[in-house]
Image 1 (cartoon, rainbow, N blue to C red):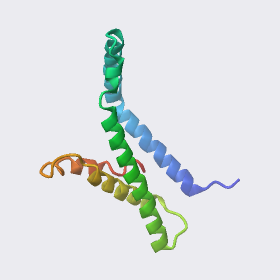
Image 2 (tube, rainbow, N blue to C red):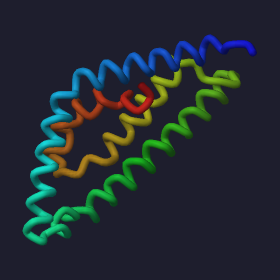
Image 3 (cartoon, helix red, strand yellow):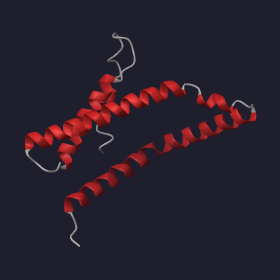
Image 4 (tube, rainbow, N blue to C red):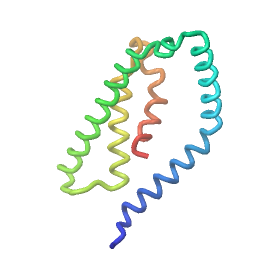
Length: 134
């Protein structure tokens, strides 16, 4: 069985990125988990379990639109890249670029503030756009 070196390189870089991210964010995850446990215990003990679903409609609506825009954009730009380049596959660099463009489109389309404030957090959102591909 022949080893596909490009796939091996992509898998290795994905693992390294994941380990780095997990290591850097572990303290925050620990704090979040402890806080969530406290809130859950309080909600159960006070009989307010349904309060944990507060805002679920808005969150689901945002998630629906954000994921739809991202995956539609990613698929569209991937097809556009393949059609224009004549390639049959996408390399790691092109994949990251396509994911970043799709993520940027998602960040711009899903900003939910007034026009004056709409782009205040956009720069941070745009920095995180390659995250799904990484």
